[in-house]
Image (tube, rainbow, N blue to C red; front, side, top):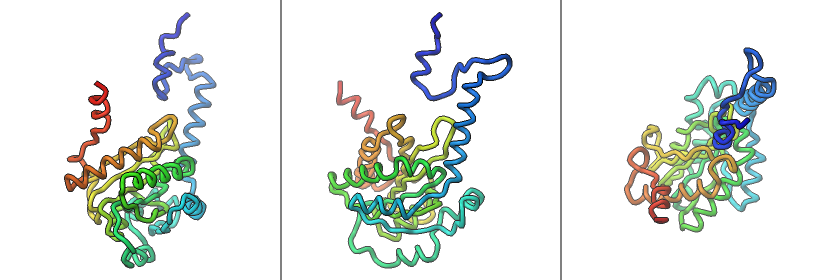
Length: 250
């Protein structure tokens, strides 16, 4: 007997047509759900080894800049989102020194809500971004590593480095289909007080199941070029890369 759901299952990671054993889920489906839930919890609570990541950044030939938020631990990070949006005093002091040269992009990396995502995909994504910037004559500043940060922490970092745009690579909130997804938030003319409506978002970076590193970097370069041309980012800046690819193929 043909399973009418089999083809649909190949197109989504959603849990569909799991079947049943009496009034409950089959054992295999139940265990898979419990494993996914445990993995998501681990991704949220797992601390990020910033020093090890910094060594990886150096191995790529890039310069890491270690900054920090006032957050004491992961428990406080979850309870106090506001603290993840600001830098501690020592980090503010580091950014008071004028950068040695002008830059187009201030790149910030933080574990956000999934340290697992950075461990699996962080360094390859940073490498892809650096290569794309080099190929397109975009000046990239130091790779700013901020443990336990929120999206808005990129605003004081970008402003402190006098960058034209700030980009933050952040671990996305894990779900039952993915615990290792990275997101990129892009802000033109960063400064404290920017709203989320003034940012662009590239989501679900986690090959092979999600967006690839080079595809994400290409989208970032496109948004950067368009933001320079229009002088803005956010809801007024549309990602038309897919539309252009479709029309070019006609």
